[in-house]
Image 1 (cartoon, rainbow, N blue to C red):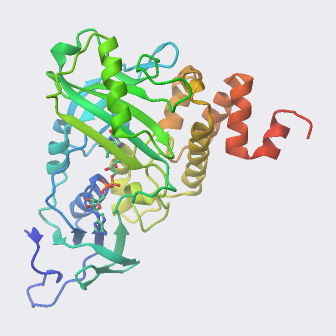
Image 2 (tube, helix red, strand yellow; image 1 turned 60 degrees about the vertical axis):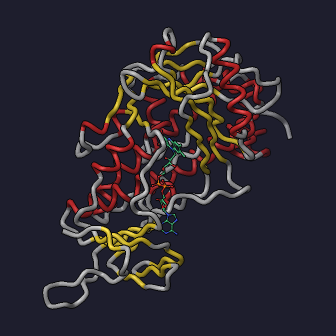
Length: 385
Ligand SMILES: Cc1cc2nc3c(=O)[nH]c(=O)nc-3n(C[C@H](O)[C@H](O)[C@H](O)COP(=O)(O)OP(=O)(O)OC[C@H]3O[C@@H](n4cnc5c(N)ncnc54)[C@H](O)[C@@H]3O)c2cc1C
């Protein structure tokens, strides 16, 4: 058994006292790095993990589509399931796809690292088989994987949200909401839009979160808090100010698909939705096995999803509810392909082209310009140069 080793950066020794070069070195112990290290150990690999705060307890509320989760994940990690979440653009859509909210503490504990060599340090230089740390140590291994997440930058669009955790009894009549774009949050016309996300954390508590899907810059926590209070007030839910709060802010751009990075750092974050945890858990086994998790189809999907983000950023704020109405009216298989089909290039193309065809003309033009470029968009639209 091995565990945390905060005092030494040396690799563990074998019975002859010689240092063992691990099969895998994972830099970063967020959900992605931890899942990768955990699954690599389960395969019998020797693993060293590196994080400045390896024991830090996660606090974010993670959720995913139930069908994204791998079979090996302990069932008790699921805290709540919404079998048919509701989504609102300008009208209601019932999604026939179970959505799960994870128990963050149980998720972290279940991805245990008891047989990995844990180093408390910061990676400063990562090469394919070597990592140099802030304390000056060098760790070598058969493969070094960057799972350090994404750094914030003004050049990167971000997702932001402000949430409160409320007794479920005070939310009577409020259905779990995947997204609700109705305009009862007090936002001034023409300002960046936000939606309400409402999910159960267990039988007794709900997370109610006003969310800016993507912005550059994104809405601030203070703006989202004011909107959340306004919206909940309009729906008869008064906040006392004592509710536990969740602050969300993370970049949705900047991941690099490839064999040496994983999780948000490795392009697993869907730039147009902000989800990555389900995809990282699903790919952890293949990544641990050294398989190619970025076939040409996945790289194509990544480019299309990035185009999807550009479209979102380019749409007039007041048109986003209509855009999502159109998306949520697509056949369920197309919605699923766009949201979760990380390697499903054909499905993603079908979903995006169906969405494009179904959009009202003025939105179609905006989306075409944002995703394809101005000249090509004119050709697609059949306009004269
Ligand atoms: C509050 C919140 C809620 C979210 N909810 C969801 C959700 O419901 N579903 C979903 O799919 N996504 C969600 N996300 C978005 C995204 O999936 C998460 O950001 C997720 O944590 C990304 O996982 P990751 O392991 O790739 O990176 P991170 O979680 O960012 O982990 C990176 C790790 O690397 C470590 N690290 C950083 N620098 C170094 C270094 N130099 N050397 C070594 N280690 C380093 C950090 O300490 C950290 O432990 C949410 C994000 C936030 C902030």
